Amino acid sequence: MKSLDVFSCIGCHAIGFERAGIETAAFCEINPFRQSEISRRFPGKRVYEDIRNPSIYDAPKSTVIIGGPPCQKTSKAAAIHGKRTGESLWPYMLSTGIAVGAEWFVVEQPPGNAPWEAEVGNDLSDAGYEVARVEFGACDVGAPYLRRRVFLVACPSLPRLEVAWRAVPSAIERVKRAANARGDWDPNQLRLIPVDASSAGERGLARQDWIEALGDSNPPYMAEVIGLAIMEEK
Image (cartoon, rainbow, N blue to C red; front, side, top):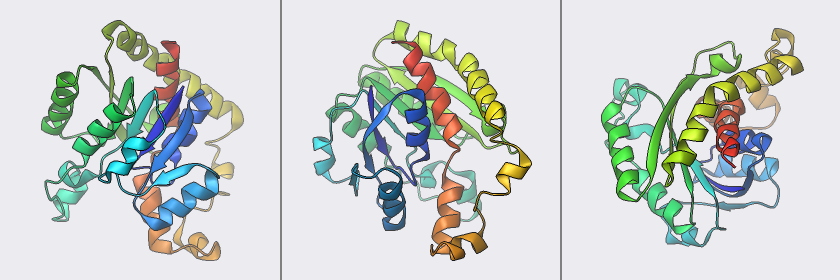
């Protein structure tokens, strides 16, 4: 099973999917700094620059398309800071997924915007997909912080979708147990991870770019949960 990873940021969804057994066929990310991080983490993988460019329709055929369209239309933070423009790149994700033959759509967003979720669900339904809504937090897989996210998971087959949807709770527990067994959330381990502005400077990275990329990224464990649930259907 292969996926097309769009709005890829620094590749955390792809890391989670690959842990679940889903190979990333290609990426799409417009930010040059984030492109460089993807190329470093996934050498040899094609990174398309702009989902609005029709060239992405030539991306490798993929079973899954995963991505979180930028939040200018949905983000509470964007609204607070006066940056909610009403724009959404979701229609481009939909057309791209159809073009590459995706059997599964995974659309990630922060919670709190039911009208936009309904719009996405209606668009997928019109395209022949059944849709399920999954919401959980990084804390549910053991992280020491909340970070709740919504995943709209879609498949043309309702029975296949139901198998995946019902597998989510057990996938959450499986990922949490594995993370705990490895000590991933151990405070002493977390202290060794360079996630602050000072460390970004030491690594030769632009501090603002690094902090913004981390802020836009979900921990890979969350995509791993969704990937395991989809793989359960096979």
